[in-house]
Length: 114
Length: 115
Image (cartoon, rainbow over all chains, first blue to last red; front, side):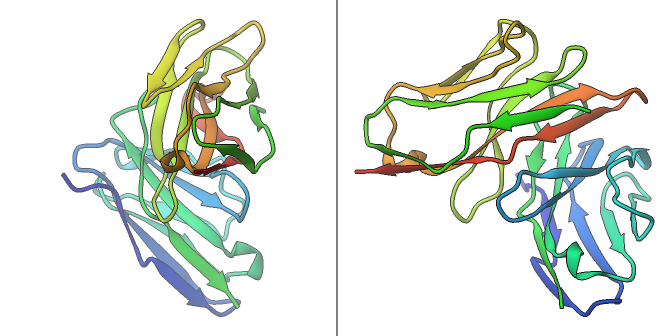
């Protein structure tokens, strides 16, 4: 079956611009996670959705970052006034639930802020 | 907060050698523990997991045992193959004060296996 997909695969933007990153989770998965991964590091948790609501957004670094999941399926991560330090690979993962459930990862979006 | 510490890489081995990648964690409560693997050019995928103390996760010849007394989840394989070359991430999933399970990943350990 179809896995988690993310678009675009690469995004280059200028400092100060607004970007949107999209995640299509596996159908039926209620839990959805966004991560940021810098070179040589592991995924860093940003936000977790259970259904349509953001159950935990404690990992968002500041108020320039925002994410939505309006219908409980597709999610969009939005970054305003991008900075060079936002450059990283943004990963999305979905799972059937929390705790001991396996997460299924997408291929990521590589964001470069120039 | 919670944290995961993995041994620094790269780990370089010859084919059929024994592999150990150390992973220790700091967390309150009873987290679930995972090893994820990222093969070259691919996304992260689950290798194995353990959800309670003394559980052993296993898959593709890899094993790891959840040791609460030493807060460790070391990954082992008796005989590695060239195709095992990848980056391995140790991770935990633990309940936050707000009631959600928040994942924490280690920085990853690169494994290179030579023929």
